[in-house]
Length: 181
Length: 103
Image 1: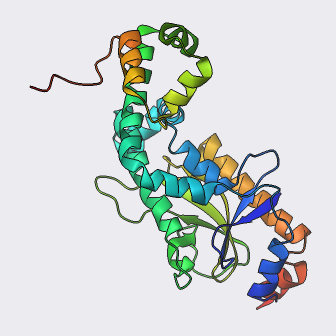
Image 2: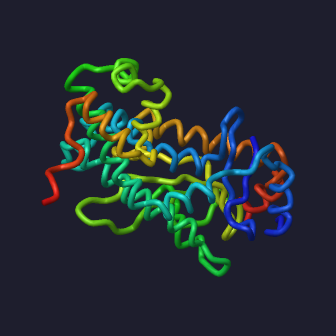
């Protein structure tokens, strides 16, 4: 597992998994701009698209994804040195209010017309204002556990969290210290 | 507790072998968004027509006189298509990409 710095100031990173041509951020946006991949995905997940978003037209879902992907990509590209990453990433669990070390986070577009955005970028928060992107997904269901492709994103987050601890990037002492605070 | 700088320094100990193309690609997508959207629309038209006519990528490549790899690239919707290629797509799939005549 390797890490690519996304912002020059080292506040945003992305994981590059073994045998991947580029990092998780690249791979997510690459898929979200690949028409053949998107069409296949929405055909396979048409029931979820209908049940949760009341959308029956796969092509409409593809165009919405392209629009959202463009906006989300611009949001990340435009992160300035004084931008607050805490405003872009939010806790994965909507109910979580207290801070957690190595917490699981998500970024999404807050407002889009017609329906909520289904695009998610997943990250681990290392410290206040420092994040590592672990992956991205099109989340059509209420929970991530419900579908294989979103469950995989949870597993990736766990894998990265474990790597960070095992390799002392965040050490066990900090982890325990944090838990005792 | 580690400081921010310590954490960043530790992350830097795990650099990738090759630089990421994310920023470069994101900039490219932004700069070329207008024609990319046309390319994406054509890819979608092609995929819909291929499904309706039960045509595989290999068969389409044969009809267009190009490689299957090139068809696969076209279907991603990220190719800057020439008018000649668009015409080949129209002929191969009985599609009309350009609508009407300019009078």
